[in-house]
Image (tube, rainbow, N blue to C red; front, side, top):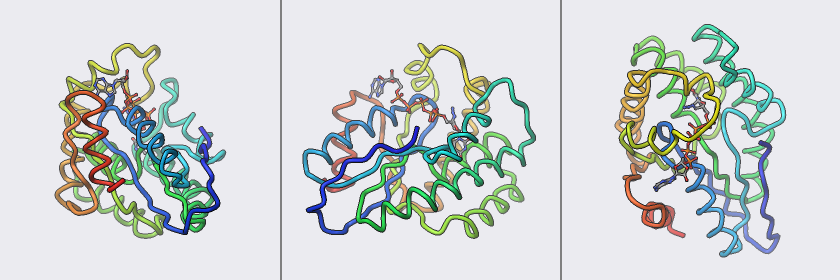
Length: 217
Ligand code: Z5A
């Protein structure tokens, strides 16, 4: 997916970078569509994008990263995530923000800490330190706000269970996703101001309302 755009040239520059995070099936895609609808109603310029992916090069890497037929080492996976991210940030996110647009991004750096740092490496301090070095050196802009959709693993899996072929991550066992959840808890503890924890249980309208309140729109 290359980002979709909504343009209203009358808007003053007020770009905001918002990422949406959570374990599998928490409702990020559905929620981002709800936020996008409100931004259109309010005439706020935005782009909608995702990781891994969001630029032509990064989408190519996404194909590799999610392909269940591809095997790679944990370090290779981590570096590919950052290679994709570097291109996405430079060619899509920063230009949009510079034009005053809001950026709605489905997953960003916290997914790397959660999936590669905890899902793959159980929170190993050396791996977390490696990830932090990559963030410090290759991510010039952190999200202004991150929405962490907090939902029990079993509920997310229940929501997502009707999908067809499972990708490379979805094939993991439940223990992997439990560690990923701990990873998001870790991220929230580290940066409680940026990362807003939203209870994602309950109907979509209720979850959307909580998020709109946090984003003040
Ligand atoms: N990954 C990584 O390892 N490291 C990184 O740095 C990054 C990513 C950036 C990308 O997968 C994979 O890459 C991801 C982590 C890894 N792997 N996993 N697992 P993706 O982007 O293709 O998929 P995803 O991010 O996991 O999203 P998802 O599973 O497709 O789910 P979602 O977008 O959060 O949920 P949804 O599609 O909006 O909703 C799922 C279903 O629930 C759907 O039928 C909805 O209608 C329903 N739904 C949504 N909200 C509700 C409510 N409130 N109630 C009831 N039902 C609901």
